[in-house]
Image (cartoon, rainbow, N blue to C red; front, side, top):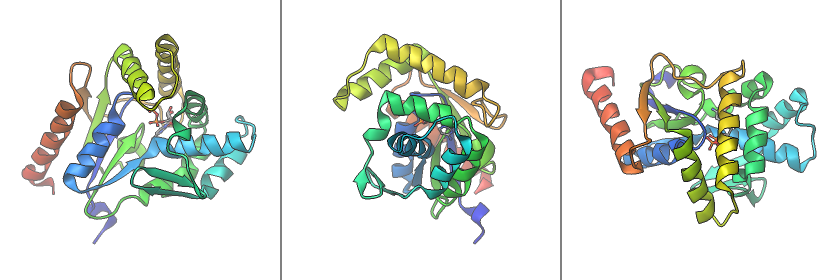
Length: 226
Ligand code: CDP
């Protein structure tokens, strides 16, 4: 069996678009593995901040990326012996992750780690460059987005549910800044890949977005691509 025979569904999109939730549910429905690539950038950011490293030191950060001692298991993300699933979601960590994700050396250091998630029976991967760089041969590529206002509201709700304090106007501003940084960087900028289909979820709930991805995947399968 060839690596390229293992189907990948790539779901890319901007911050807080809901791609993580949609990707996880699609993976669960299909019995596929799931890659949250953003978590890897967040983990590098968290490790670097804890070690008080200079977030401008690209070489040092790529070393951190190579050496990350991380295990993903169900809802847990274990860095060493500690579950950091919540610690990587703070706004401070989000901003640091977005900054360090602009470094080509860090992106390169995380490439093989991301590709290793491609296992039978298949993978759903979410991020910014899943369809363009990490899995260019993905059978289905989705660009999942929503208006910045809607995304700020969703992120606010998500943080509140986790008991993390947040301010909606600060979140809106952060999302716009992160969009600009993600879209304007030269290494793997956020954009809709030519082969990706647009899924705008401003007016859709999670269930409708999940159904849309599953329907598109079923169509790919019946067209004989798989
Ligand atoms: O939840 P949100 O979309 O804000 O973040 P995330 O998907 O967890 O990603 C965290 C940061 O990592 C983002 O700000 C992106 O800049 C970066 N990222 C990336 O550059 N490439 C990826 N494949 C995934 C995330």
